[in-house]
Length: 97
Image 1 (cartoon, rainbow, N blue to C red):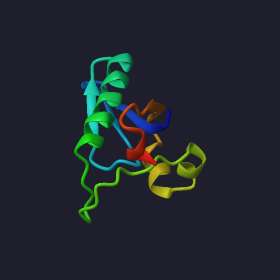
Image 2: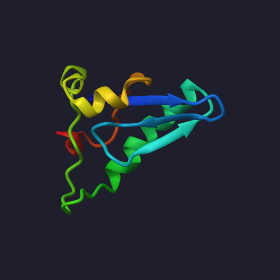
Image 3: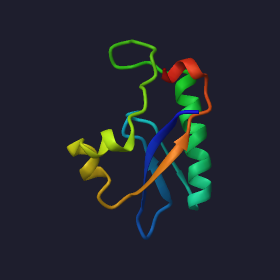
Image 4: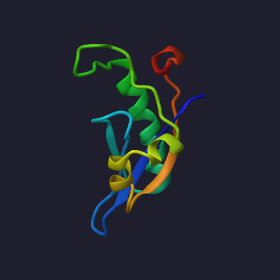
């Protein structure tokens, strides 16, 4: 089962927020780490069901490995104060191939 790397952020006066470097625009929030990780998996699944890229393609972005992401300067900046988690992708297998 593929996994997507998620960035979890938390401000002192807010919920936990999750974003995915490989799936722009897919975000969610939750009241605890467990809650937000469950919602993150659901958000990926929901996004894959109805995905359309900016160029009009329906191909869901493939996940990069943590090693690949660590060489990306944008990821380095975004991950600076984040908890990094691997979120399982349970949607159709062909979506992320």
